Each structure stands twice: as structure tokens, then as C-alpha cells.
Length: 251
Image 1 (spheres, helix red, strand yellow):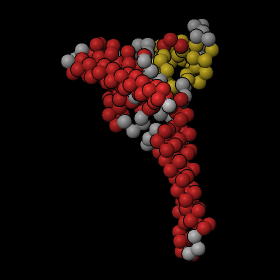
Image 2 (image 1 turned 30 degrees about the vertical axis):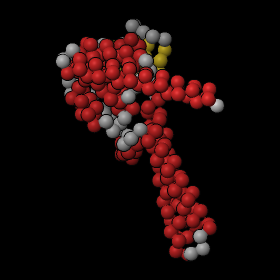
Image 3 (image 1 turned 180 degrees about the vertical axis):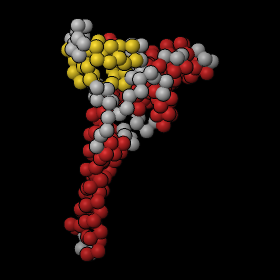
Image 4 (image 1 turned 180 degrees about the horizontal axis):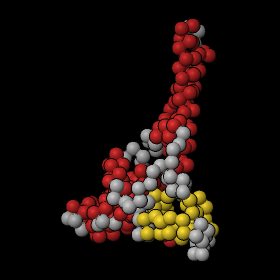
């Protein structure tokens, strides 16, 4: 028993030490950023990312460094990564809008079904983990309310329990579907940012294909398919074509 307790204490101390080191590095990065030494701040932030630590704030700070350095595509990429983790991150939303306003391509969004847009906006209110937690809480409320309906004898209490159970079950389904939607967004690899200053979109996955249109640095695209070193993309206005895989960076 003493050996198990000792092992747990050692594990906790190791975790605490790792967290303390990461916090210390993040403080150094913040100091470098405040001193306008964006290269040093980026170096520290990247070293933390390389260790497997991720957060919306970390990607947001990385994006800010790139934005200050005038590197548009990397800043947009990391703002998008911050919002993928935390879609409610208001600072990331604001700064992403500023960065996107400086891109060359002004692509209109193809008209979509209102309900689909509304659902996407609703599910983006929080992360998949938060939606999952909400759905679990609501499901527990549903079970408790059903228990009240089944086991309590007073008519008005039973009616109340049944009503609460129906409402809680409805919102359980809504929150579960929102969690599923957000999970797909957070884990999908079907969106990317153009990193080349200019890239010509081809009609086929080779250099001999016809030139369709040109995209510039910082433009967001959806990945449709892949073939060797080529990627088929579709823009927000519905235009599609092929470009070299090394011209984009997946969000």
C-alpha cells in the first residue's frame, strides 16, 4: 500500500513539474512578445506545442506573433486553430476578422440553407466536450424526473416530473447532436489555408491542366479530395479545382 501511495505521489510531482515548466516557458514567451521580440516568442510557443500541449489561447498567441510579423497566412491558420478548440474565443474571432480583411481574395460565401447556417452557429457556441457535459447533465435530469413520475404518488408532482423529463430529453438530444457536430468540426482535416503568395488552380491534378483561377495567401479553402501531391479544393463561393499539396496548410 505504501508503495502505491509513493508511486502516486511521484506521478503527481512529475505532472506538477511538467506543468510548472510549461507555465514558466509561457511566461517567458509573453515577456518576449511584450518586448516585441516575436521570433523568440514564437520559438518558445512552438516548443510548447511540440511537447503536445494545445489550447485555444496558445494558438491565439502564436497567431498574434505571426500577425505582428506581417505573416498573414500563418496568423489566419492559428486563429482558425484556436477557434477549432474554442469557438467562443471572442479575441480570436475579432483578430481573425482583421487578418482576413487584409487578404487579396474577396470571395463571397455561396448561399446556404438558413437552418443549416443557424445550426452551425448554434453548435459553435461552445466546444464538443462542453456540449457532451451538458448532454450528460440533462440526461441525468431526465432520469431523475422519470423516477419522480414513476414512484411519486401525488398527481401534480407526477405531472411536473413527466413534463420536466420530456423537456430535458428534448434538450439532451439537441446538446448531443451539437456535441457530435462540434466533434466532427474539431477532428476533421478538410479545411486549409493557402500559404503560397499566389497559386494557380488547375482543372486536373497535373501541371498540364487548364488554368481555372488564382488564389492568394491567406485564403481559406475546403479540401474535397487528394491524389498524390495534388489536392482538390473548393472555395466558399463554390468554385473548385486542383492545387499542389505544398501550397496549403491544413487547419
